[in-house]
Amino acid sequence: MRVAPQDSLSTRAVSFLVNIMSAYPFLSIIIPVYNGGNAFAVCLKAIDQSSFRDWELIVVDDGSTDNSAAIAKRTDATLLQTGGRMGPGAARNLGAQVAQANYLCFIDADCEVHPDTLAHLTNTLKNHPEVDAVFGSYDDAPRALNFIAQYKNLLHHYTHQNGKEEASTFWAGCGTVKRSAFLALGGFDVRRYPRPSIEDIDLGYRIRHAGGKIHLAKQIQVKHHKAWQLNSLVKTDVFDRAIPWTKLLLSNQSNVINDLNLQTASRISIVATYGLLLFTLASFIKGEFTLLIFMSALVLMFINWDVYRFFYIKRGFTFMARSIGMHWFYYFYSGLAFVLGILLHWQNQYQSRTVAKTIRVLKRSFGLAI
Image 1 (spheres, rainbow, N blue to C red):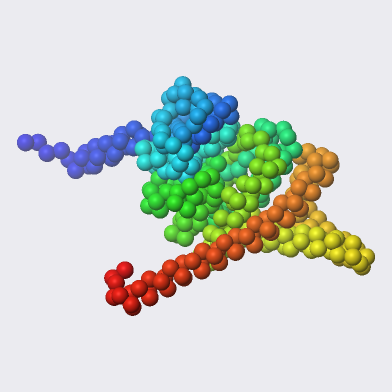
Image 2 (image 1 turned 90 degrees about the vertical axis):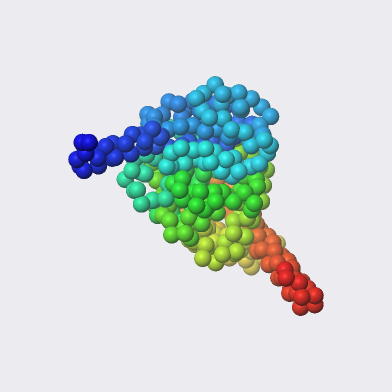
């Protein structure tokens, strides 16, 4: 019997592995959708028109009552169903279970990728193989034209574009994670975050806590279609972001990170906002607080001047002036949410200690093996 040379066997083995790897896509794009509407159709069309083509598309319908599933079926996407309203975290986890690529690319159903977004993403992953996760930002031209939507999306764009590239958090609007790292961490925490919240931020903290690296790639951008309104914005910022974020930070002191929305300037701005409010109210009783009112406003203007200048460059003086008022209002309700988050954290801590104390008493009293 003729024995093949060792180098020939090695070459065949390498070739076999290359063929296996090439059979799988580079990216598994996962889109959770709930009543996506026209924005979802635009999202899918934009992905199909991307210059980078080595991907598979997985759509997870999270109990939609509109035609989102029918829209997805008109594409080459793999369509999964959660069977009910489970939340985007659970939908993404379901998609990750069937994904074939080494990288999971999460894109929100109301986000429209640019033709080169996936190409920039892929180049970043190839140039930084040591990175476990990469995310980008909204662009500076949101689809919705109303003031609140323009303000919110431009603020998000500015925040991410001026954040540290070595990030300590994650964003699932347009973000990618190594599938192995994602599964090892158990994916998104759907027990703690059963509805749209900060499940992506929590994942980022857990990646960093496990020793992983996260990269903020500022050239990776998507267009946001959400038409924010004032009531929905405040409700989301307070109950789905600020309060759970505060509780998350307090539950693990190692997670207190000066990154993105948690910068020291934001904390000082909250204090200055409440100083401005209190001194203004006090001035109605005594007219001796004019200087303190002026100083509080000056601090807010000075600390946030770069973002206000950004608003002026992008949308002009009138937009900037309206944005300043909206920004100070944001600091006002963020401060309230922070206090509420602390109180709720203390309540949870008290309840946990009470339960633990009760169990210890039962053990001592009855010798229960609890």
